[in-house]
Image (cartoon, rainbow, N blue to C red):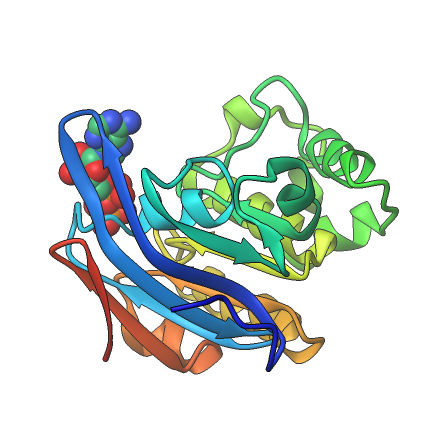
Length: 216
Ligand SMILES: Nc1ncnc2c1ncn2[C@@H]1O[C@H](COP(=O)(O)OP(=O)(O)OP(=O)(O)O)[C@@H](O)[C@H]1O
């Protein structure tokens, strides 16, 4: 099977295998995600969802097989990282930077500008804008990470368990902000254990099990 250029695909994998240590996590994963599509990625604990997202963000290399992100080879980390933002399950913040500084730094890294104060207000963090990442609650960290993903608006946004640690209002915010990203054409992959919530933003559903990816 070859990697095709049409229709325009944001993500393509062909028979990708991935081994971590002694464990084979992905066993022949093939995937085509057209530009602008929203995908919900389901699977039991330990199924390999985080691993798959890290691979798509060029943070892990396939042991075998090939892939392209916005038509760049998955192994071309520099090019891929220009297009992709991964919101990790632990939020991936700089613990010694404040909320404001975390967002400003992320924007600077991508050569972007944005309304940081407005972004913090939007996720209810304006009162803790000067608090360091390490002193935020788990839900606050998640809100800040969500705010960063929304500000960056990378063409491919990969989100690992966005609903975890959030209250009802926080989960609604996730739907609102990620929904806005979809609306402007961002390709979204959401790994989640809350299919009903995730599918409202990302209706195509894939399930990872025994190292293989199948359409739900
Ligand atoms: N660095 C690593 N070295 C070896 N094995 C690893 C490493 N990282 C993850 N694994 C293993 O890979 C498998 C898949 O883990 P992964 O975190 O991708 O699953 P997941 O589907 O995201 O799980 P969860 O729903 O619990 O978050 C697990 O068996 C895990 O122990």
